[in-house]
Amino acid sequence: MDFKQDNLIKSLRIQPLIVLIRLDNHFFNNSCKKDNLLLKIKKLSDYGIKNIEIGWDSNPEWVNLILEIKNKFKSINIGVASITSRQSLDSILSLDLNYSMSPFFSKEIHLKAIKYNQLVIPGISNIENFKEAINLGYKIIKIFPASKLGIKFLNELKDLKKKDIFFIGAGGIKSKNLKELLKSGYDTLIIGRELRNQIPDKDLEIWLKDY
Image 1 (cartoon, rainbow, N blue to C red):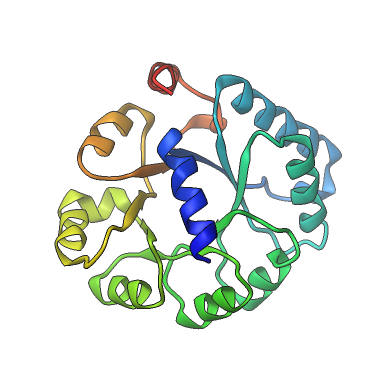
Image 2 (cartoon, helix red, strand yellow):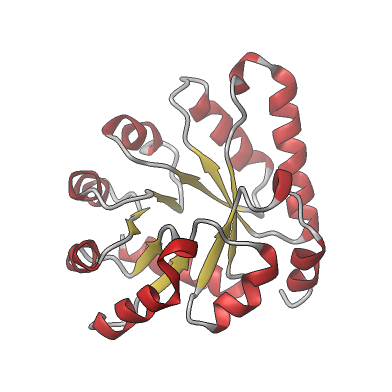
């Protein structure tokens, strides 16, 4: 897992942003939705986005979808969001993903992920879980929901850490605040619902010019 964490950190230092895409309702019942998703990813790639996270789905076709995305967009660092159960974890073990994430800390899930060398970055919202995650060997932590927990919580975690930890902020992040939040101490940010239809707006376009 250390190798995957180190590689992800290197990637995110180049461009400290992950765009999160969640699948539409009834996604697998409409072929047009898949075409729209692939077009959306291509547009993000054309804008220069390097890291994209796809929301997990219980539909059996979801695994094939992720494989297709990985094959079509080799220049994109593809990850998966919302790994919250054994079912979701089991479904990604064969995908050879560079990373995946959970919205919260689940020791059972993380121990199994570590056993199978699958990086499932924990979502942290309290100090106790932060300490547990560090004890399991995590160098990368996602603070969620970042917009509600605020910079004060990030600073508390920074004061507690015994070694360098890479902090990802997620939840309510807006493109207009990217520069400010990165200066405040986050190492990377995830932007999803706050970016309308996951298409770069003017603020994100301006920010991307530096990357």
